[in-house]
Length: 133
Image (cartoon, rainbow, N blue to C red; front, side, top):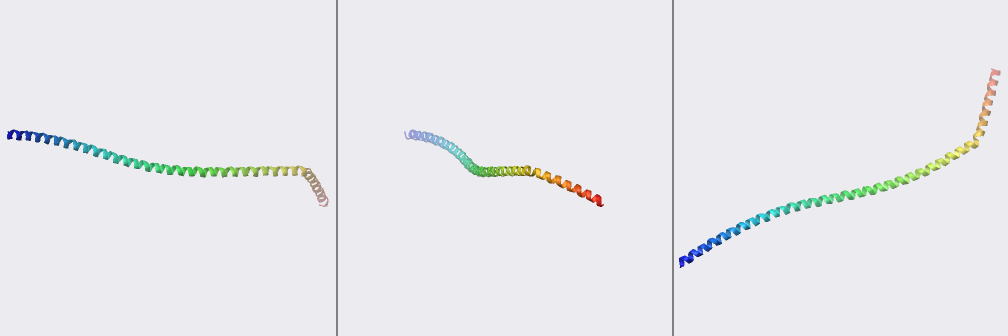
């Protein structure tokens, strides 16, 4: 009976040894799977970190563009002010030109008479030079 019990104990031990070997194989498989999952998570964490950096750089670029746009708006506003001032200057110049035209029209006949008188004086001087000459 002891032999039978010893044989039964050996059979049980052999079965337990196979069970432990199977369990260890499963554990190694699970460990490899967890390591692969860990590597994937590490890679993804690095990717996410890189994306965060890219997003922060894009935000900085957008803020810089906003600043540029605000500066352009200020420039455009200044240009509009300059244009309005130029329009006022042009309007003033037109008024001055119209005033000159009015003075010219008022004095145009007097200048014509003066021109006629000067021509007559030149003619008399020419006659005098010919007689004397």
